[in-house]
Figure 1: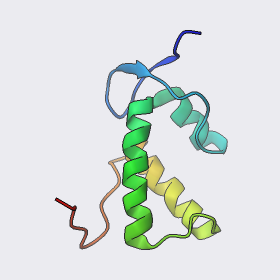
Figure 2: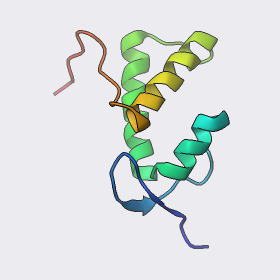
Figure 3: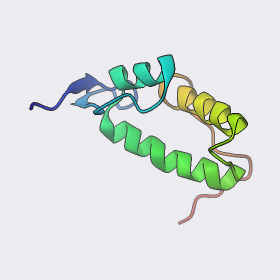
Figure 4: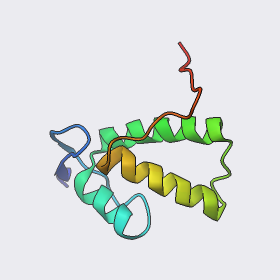
Length: 90
């Protein structure tokens, strides 16, 4: 089966898309329709940092709302900001 291609909103080029919506609801569908696998992988790395820096418990409603908001910003907004005081590991 041919790989599904999308015009990626994050990387601004035609790239292989995701196999299924990665999140529930309208946001998940927008990501499925507009985000490449490559950009999704970048998000997963960013998400890992957010979970560690903010000490999120992803199973909680509060963390899921925070993650959804950050995901929206990462792909469709101004871009998600690093936590205050965040220093990347060199």
